[in-house]
Image (cartoon, rainbow, N blue to C red):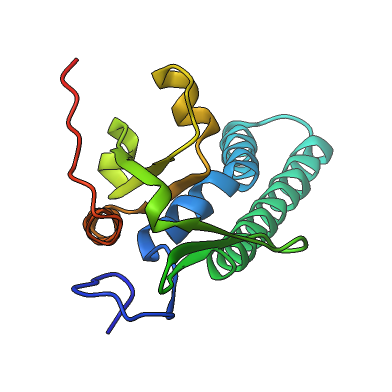
Length: 186
């Protein structure tokens, strides 16, 4: 069963956040490579339309290739770092609690007991909807702040997870926590 489509969760099995989340992480980390790709293209266009000194044209050729190589290295680094972060981030539905794991050099794992879950919110910005990802916020007992502070201080925030996994996880957690979905109309 692929991690992208979850019809039922296997107890004590580690789940990643889905392939769309990997592509989100890659795109978030690839700005450096994209900037140097644009620089390489601009230099190449200037070189193509330049009729000046051959020394300047040679310098522009070297600068465009150098910028292109830096862009490729930036994309490779973004891909590898996205893959590493994606592999080291996930969740386990334990018998009594949801375990969230993340971190590469400093690995953190914390548990949210089902009995403390009060509500779960799924947020999707326009960009998130286009990429097919969501932000999952697990509101737990003990947070008496106003609504915006609850979202920021909540124990369980998964900043990016595939939307279909988020919906399935929300339903499963609410079922295990024996909580009815709270819908707020603003």
